[in-house]
Image (cartoon, rainbow, N blue to C red):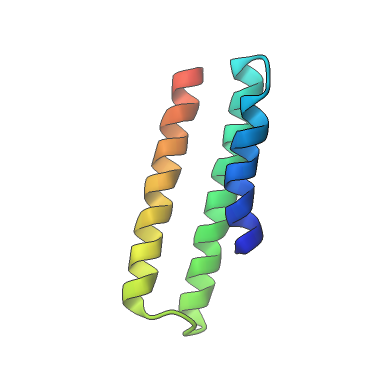
Length: 78
């Protein structure tokens, strides 16, 4: 989960240096994939009882908000 969470921001940082919106958008989509990996990890952690329901719900809400922001950002570059 740490790797995928870090991948979200690192993809955005790398993509921001690209010269075209099309190239940057590819990195945003990679970030979107990474936030979905985070959500999957959160789901597994909850299933394994590593986090309680309150933490699970809070993290899933945050992951969903980030995914929505990335989706909106991606859409604005098309």
